[in-house]
Structure formats: structure tokens, C-alpha cells
Image (cartoon, rainbow, N blue to C red):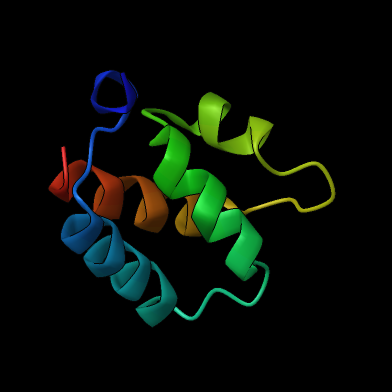
Length: 72
């Protein structure tokens, strides 16, 4: 059942977390990274829906989405 919803292996998820942390985006908290890994947003609209209290600028959004695309 869980395999239907899991799109990344634990190894891939850890690697994605590491790459997102390497961007050193101050606004990006550990809980935000977890949400990103769970949902894997495909565009800026989906990504911005994850952040209620944070506004990412265009460059930060692009870095995050480009990193996610590497794992799809």
C-alpha cells in the first residue's frame, strides 16, 4: 500500500535532503525540506503552497525545483 505513494527510496530521499541543505537557503527549515521530499512539487505554485509563513524568491524557488527534477 505504501509503495503506491512513495516515489523515492530512503537513499534517494536522504540524498535529496542533503542537496537541498547544500543550497543553504536560510528560509528553508528542516520541516520544509521534509514536506518537499514528501510531495515533490513540480512547479513554483505547488512549492509555494507548502510555505505558509515563508516567501521564497524566484532564485530560491528555481534552485529547489531544479534539485527536485534531478530525482524524478
